[in-house]
Amino acid sequence: MRHLDEAIDVEADFYSDGRITPRRFRRGRPWKPVTSVGRSWRDAGGAYHVLVMDETGRVHELCLDPATLTWRLVGLADAGEGQA
Image (cartoon, rainbow, N blue to C red):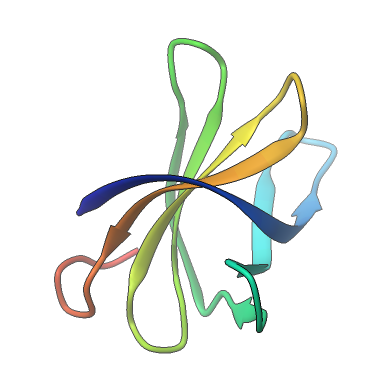
């Protein structure tokens, strides 16, 4: 997985039990639908990371900063390199 650090837009569902499920995201335009949501975790600083797959099969690591509620794209794998 290639490491990146890009601000992105994400539409996600937030649930009362603390789950966060990204539905679509964009790096500029157009919106990319999330076709699969993989594992998620919180890092030592409290940021929420989640692996998602787009319609082309590429895996993206998205990261939500809970202090600012901003999303970043922090990792990107080529199709077939990994699965969400």
